[in-house]
Amino acid sequence: MRKPNDVTVKDAISKMLDVYRLRRKFDETSILSIWPEIMGTAIANRTKQIYIHDKKLFLRIESSVIKNELVMVRQGIIQKLNEHAGSVVITEMIFL
Image 1 (cartoon, rainbow, N blue to C red):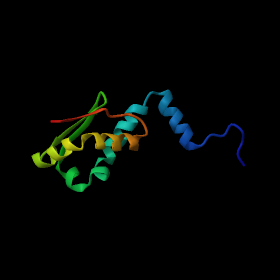
Image 2: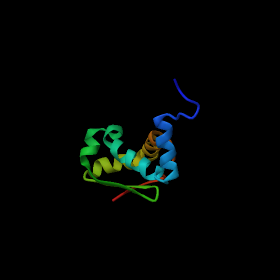
Image 3: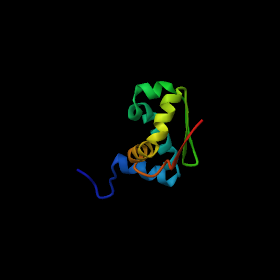
Image 4: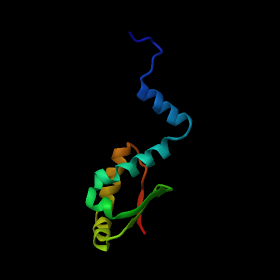
């Protein structure tokens, strides 16, 4: 039986992330870990470096053909990644 001041684990963790100001870093790490799942193994295997800094996703792609294809669908990728995070974590993609 639940007591009136009981809180679910999800709500407790969410509140902790907000109180300690870890939400943005948590969302960024979540996006980096989901990259192979969202983009597929072919692109993930050719991604040599990926990191987020100041709401910008930096990517080093080994194949110039794949890099050009990703440039064409840049906004769609940003939208998918932000939907996964549940907030605007990425505003721009930069290819190195």
